[in-house]
Image (cartoon, rainbow, N blue to C red; front, side, top):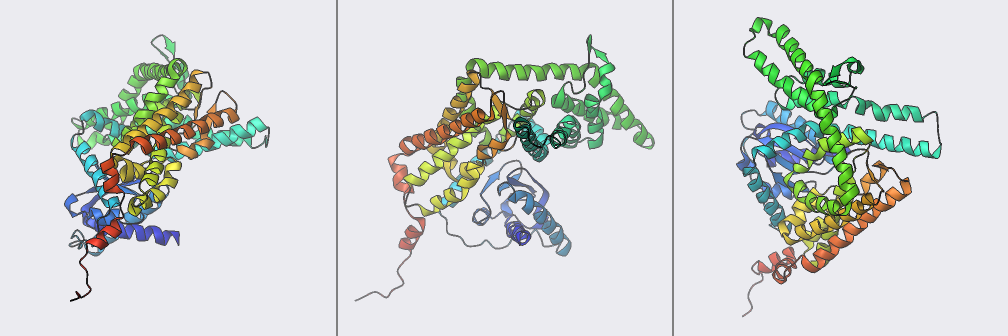
Length: 500
C-alpha cells in the first residue's frame, strides 16, 4: 500500500514539472527530490506546492521539491520509473505541459512562492566559491545514510559496553560500526572523481592508498606515515588530482593505448603525490581543524555557540550547510564525534519555537496554521526546510527571531563545552530529537543528554518568545490574521436573486 502511495505522489508531481521529456536528471538528498529541467517555464508551481506530499519548493541550480526524510528516498525511484515509462510510451509529446489545475491562492501558496523567488534570486547571484562548496557537498551527501546507520550502532555499542551487557555482541557491533569509517576515504575518492568528471573507480583507487596499512613503511617530510593520515581531506585532494591527471592523459595518449596508459599514469602520478605530499599536508590540516574546534569551544564556547547557532539557519536557507560535512567527518575520524553538530542543531530548535509562536499569533489564518501543524513533526526531528520555506522566511521577521532562538540554544550548549563537558554526535545528518541516540562525549551519557535537551528547551523558548513579541508588526498581524477561505468566499458575488 505504501508503494502505491509513493507512486501516486510521483505520478502527481511528474506532469506538474513538465512531463518526462522535460526532466534531464534526477537525484535526491536527505529531504529533497532534485531534478534538472529543460524548460522551467513548464512547471506549474502553485499546483505543485498544493500537493499534500510536497512540503516546499526551492529553485536553485536544480529544481528541488521538499518531500521530507524517508519519503523522498521512496518517491524518487518511483519518479525515475515513471519518467522512463513516459519517455518510452510517448516520446514525441511527453514534454507537452498539461493544463494548469485551478487552485485558489492562499497564504500558504504566497509564502512558498516568496521562498522560491528568494532562492531563485540567490541562485542567480551564486558565486564560484558557493558553487564549489555545493560540489563538495555533493560528494558527501550520498554518504550520510551510512554515517547515520554506523553512528547509531556505535552509540548502541557504547551503551552496551557501559552497562556490561551482551559482551559477546559488543565486538560484532564494533566491527559493524567501524568498518565503514575505516574505509570512508575510498568512498570519498570515488564520489569526488564522479562529481568532477573523472572515472570514479580511479578516484577510489587513489584514495585507497591513504587507508592501506603498508603506508606505515613510508617516510615523508622526515616522518613515518600512518594509515588513514589525512583522512577524508586527503582522499578528496588525491581524487581531485587524479581527475586532472586523467583528463591531461586523455589529451595526448593515443586512443589505442588509452585503456592501458591513462589508468596507469593516473594512479601512479596521483599515488606518488598523495604519498609524498598530500597525506602529510592533509594530515596537518585535519589536525588543525580538530585543535581549532577544541580550543574554540574550550575558551569561548558560549560566544562561539551563540554565533554558530545564530548563523546556521541562513546557511540552511542557502543550501550551504552541507559544505560543513567534510569538517564534521574529519572531527568524527579524529575523536569519534563532531562537537559542532549539537550546537548547530540548536538553530532547528529556534525555528520550531518561532513556528509555534506564529501559530499562536495568527489564530484566524487556517492555511498557515495547517502548514505549521504538518511541518512541526519534521521540525522536532531536525528537518527545518518545510518551516523555513513555508513559514518563517516568507514572513521575514520570524526568520530573524528564529535565528535568535538558535543563537540562545547554541550559547547554552557552548557554555557547557567551555566548562569542560565536551560532547558531540557520532554521525552527521540527524538533528533535533533524532540526535539523542548519536550523542557521545567525555562525560556520562545522562549528563550529555541533559545538556543537549536543555539546549533544545532554551532554543524553543527563546525562539517562541522572540517571535511572539517581536516577530510581527501591527500591519503584518492585520494582513495575515485572516482566514483566506472566508475572505475568498466573501469576495465572490452573491448568487441569490436580488430582493425588490
